[in-house]
Length: 118
Image (cartoon, rainbow, N blue to C red; front, side):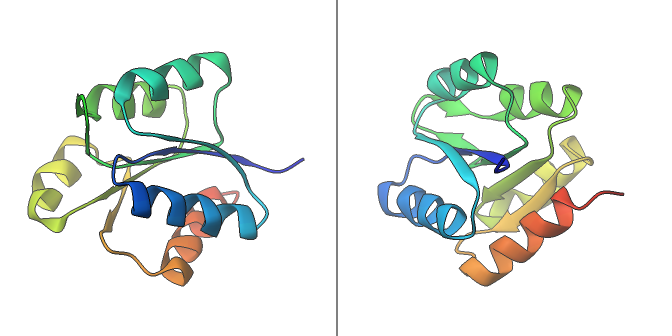
């Protein structure tokens, strides 16, 4: 059974690039979700194995969603512009930060590391 990755990204091209990258690598993709509400609803229906969240979606910041996922032991990759990196890293020490744009090979490398058993 393929691991399930939730994608929350409001930039259309970036969102579909992420989905294609993960699907081609053999993951099951949930999304993309352009808004927090639909991403949260998807998480309530079925907990993902990992979440890739853009920090800012069409309806606000994903901080609450990221915190809930971390509390539910779901690994979170915050995929965002690096302008906010220091603040975000301080707020979510348990999450992984990835700068946009991120090459697919680097993205998959980080996902594999995050999902690797400890």
